[in-house]
Length: 185
Image (cartoon, rainbow, N blue to C red; front, side, top):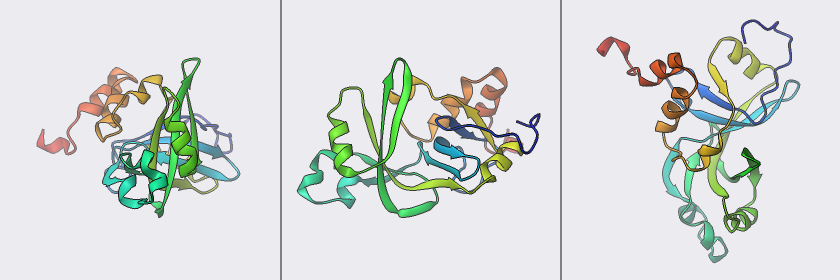
């Protein structure tokens, strides 16, 4: 990223952002973010995949019509709009990960009935204004990678960050296995 001129467009829609280990504080610490939308002129929209909460959809949507969703764990999608619950579906097509975000509860119910489809619930989302994500990438706050099909079989827990980081390179494996505070090593 640092070799590109500041005005060079970066196209990252559909990629995964792994928080750099330097992002130790706050919600993005060891986060894996699916970048669902990215447009240099409008900003970006993503969902943190690896921050499950203690709540399930059944804790929040109690009507009988939401019964098929009640056991789905709610994940913290990001710091913006945490009072809103949305759904996302993930599946593969020709060995590529596909997804639909911001789907309704009714669409989520339909998708739970489709073989090979993973449905997740999210409170909030991660958002960046015009140019903000590009600036963060140039400062090396994020490591970008392509989503892998195996993400459908992975637990979307905190350990997902280290698992995905290890697969990038030997250097990234060292970063993934380093203690949070290297001075206690």
